[in-house]
Image (cartoon, rainbow, N blue to C red; front, side, top):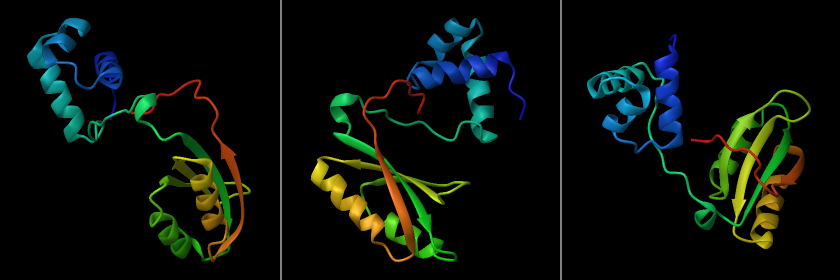
Length: 144
């Protein structure tokens, strides 16, 4: 779907604050409130906007975040993914190209909890190797 400048500006405004009223968005974008609502509805129906979510501030986020890069044995993906899905500390798993097969995003309340999670992942049947990266400071975040 082609997005015009108004759609892009609307999406940008909603990324900044999805709770902004339709009237305020209309004023920001210089268009009628009804036009804003119609565009939001169209973007939702066409799957451009999939939903709205909550972003936690620093006080609400887990103390530690890490990424595990995981190489798996051939045909072991389903079993490894099932094991990762069972871990509440695993927030997302992405397939990758290159040396590693999976990129696993992890959160933990303590270094001990993170260490246990990483050990559990590394010891999973079908995992050839893993490498972990602990996130120190977020410099740029455009996450929804």
